[in-house]
Image (cartoon, rainbow, N blue to C red):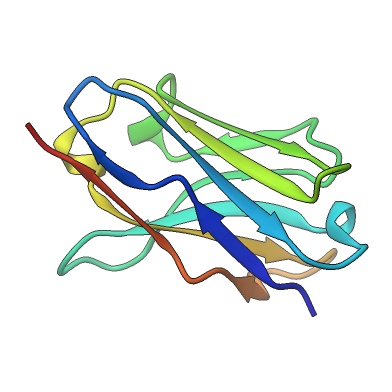
Length: 119
């Protein structure tokens, strides 16, 4: 079992920045691929970014490439999402998730943190 707790959300003006954190319980954090997802009101949850177990590979949805950066610190059992140049359309609840080796779907999810981009 892995428990995930997100933090760092809030209200920010367009063009601003936020850094989300996701703290994981357990001693096997480094064995999981980690991802960030988001869900805007009235929309389905969408993939935002993922990072490999070692942190050597990452992937992003096209809409955030060049603006968001995912990273992880396996010693601290934490994954981050640095979000720059935020736009109103980035407004959503952001979730972190963990995927075990050889799994297609993400197995564990956090409770989410709200990000609102508005002037």
